Length: 273
Image (cartoon, rainbow, N blue to C red; front, side, top):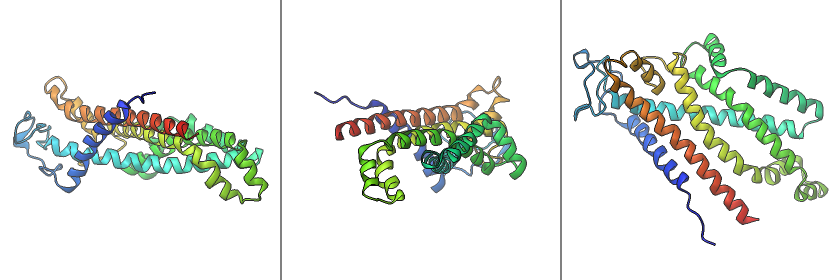
């Protein structure tokens, strides 16, 4: 039987690499200083000198999009990685611990799910002040419940496999059973969840910056650039396009990449059975 292609993986990879390349190039070299103002060139339209035009302070929007793309991806990777590690640890503990401790852990996870991300950001801003760190912390905490529940369900399901029971019968240590017997089958779902969660983290960070809780001026963020362009939507509507299209391409690419990667890993797992 002929194998089907995986267009989601291919398109998602291309879109994600496109925005990631902007961020990487922006770190190494940008056409202009993304924070440098030139009030004599406010609201210049796209041109050879400024391909994305200039904003209300005369700053080059291409340079700011490059800076914001790197910030969005790096903050999303950090927040999702920390949230995933914490969630996996809590989920594993809930699956293997005594019933009373498992119940306590999962009620803690439920409590985290009850807090909206914006409220978490407000709490973090009250403690640490506004900026990138509180927004990363808020996004990180919001990622914990999904990874906890997924890990708990899959580890509890894996406990009933014959290979796990055999390892216990042979007296294998608990840590060895978890690492070498329980986690390999779970990795497929966790990798898929991780990739898909990055897109959600980018959107959350941009939302917080849009509300003024994330990245602060003069640094650049896709959400903050959208918020600044909103004031000039009727007079200079093209101002929203560079940051808006970049955010759309990045989130779409990450979501397609997650779906495609999940299909690929699931297919390979099925072939290995």
